[in-house]
Length: 179
Image 1: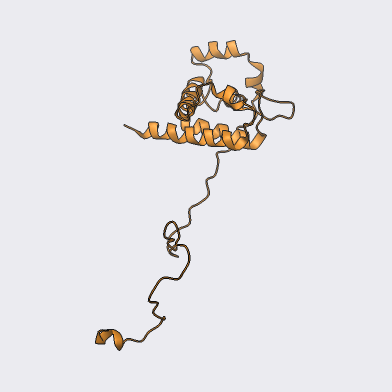
Image 2: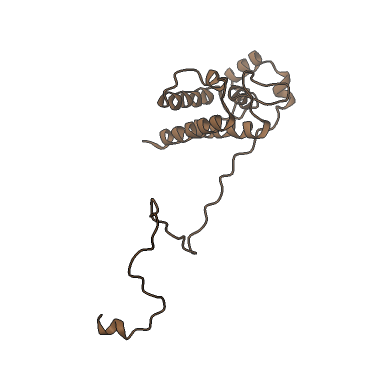
């Protein structure tokens, strides 16, 4: 042992070999106290119920007025935000299968998207682009059917739906920021 090491005071015992037992799959690195903790993801707020104007004016009249520039059919949203709003609606009101809305007020994925369109949170074009991203993610997983048919399959649970919407939102976000 070199002389400068021998004269230094020891603060911890020297271990010649690793302790017995299985080795961890990957090394565990302790978090430094200076590293900021990641804030939890806060979902966007659910939409408010439709206003009386939105409820009373029939859809064909809304479309006619929108063509004249006198009615806004929705707020233009990127598909990734629309998919996160859809997830937020399902988490707030509940999720169901086979019906757009059931007697308890729960919604399926298509029902949640329809609610967002009818309340003006997204345009029909933005919804269609979000649906394309959901179909792309389903196709990457080897599923070749409409998203609402996939939603209605027996054995489908809300964690499956949450995973699809989250993956589709990430896919849409990557395509939005790509040059």
